Length: 175
Ligand SMILES: [Zn+2]
Image (tube, rainbow, N blue to C red; front, side):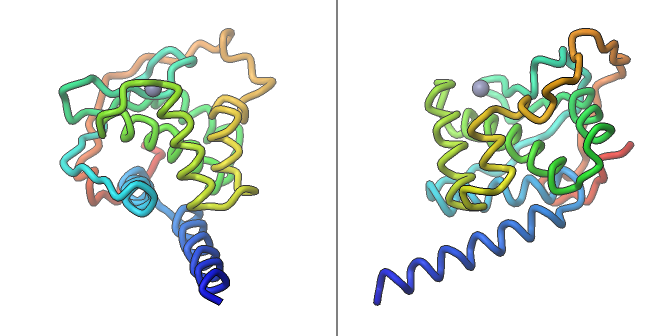
């Protein structure tokens, strides 16, 4: 009985997170889901992070510099996903997987293998095994760009920008 109840609770949680992610508008709302799912799975949180957008080499998704509150997200890469996919669910899932990876580093986990395993675990617990987010966590975010010749792409290099009011932002992706 207790077990059934907790399964039902889990599936309601999954439903709610899926719907939030699919409807999220912009980086700030995806970020709120990153923080909520990490809190729910690990009971950890950190506030006061800042997000910057920059055009980086396309093999790099994002980075966090140790000892800072900054996450830098690869705007050029996100733009390619936007252009090639058009699905908000997929774009938000892609951004979620990149941001939660850096958030886990910022929570004091320097090791790649540990962070990747946790991104997968949290995605599975929050969105379910069959959700695109969990697939991206398992196969890597670049798996949705298979067949796109990233090495041949010549993305313009624009100036770095800060996402204003990131922690409660309503900024849209398209600038
Ligand atoms: Zn990393």
